[in-house]
Image 1 (cartoon, rainbow, N blue to C red):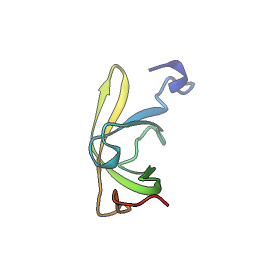
Image 2 (cartoon, rainbow, N blue to C red; image 1 turned 180 degrees about the vertical axis):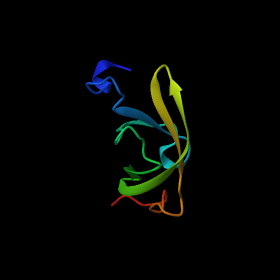
Image 3 (cartoon, rainbow, N blue to C red; image 1 turned 120 degrees about the vertical axis):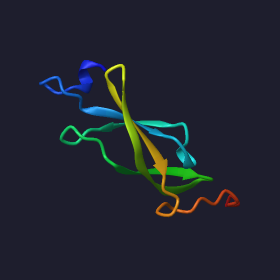
Length: 90
């Protein structure tokens, strides 16, 4: 972890969210820790077939990789916007 990823006391300020399934499968996102903790549930906005959609993800587990916190998230299809890949372009 770089020095810009830590506060003045040397504590981490960022973590990496890894999306293990759903429309964002395989992507990662750098996110801020709040009071030293990561979020158990996060939302992401992404374009699918040209339409913006909100996707919800829940924490699966966390681990340390070379001093960097990484949290894996799983897609919550029931709470997310529907994914319509059959949309015709306008």
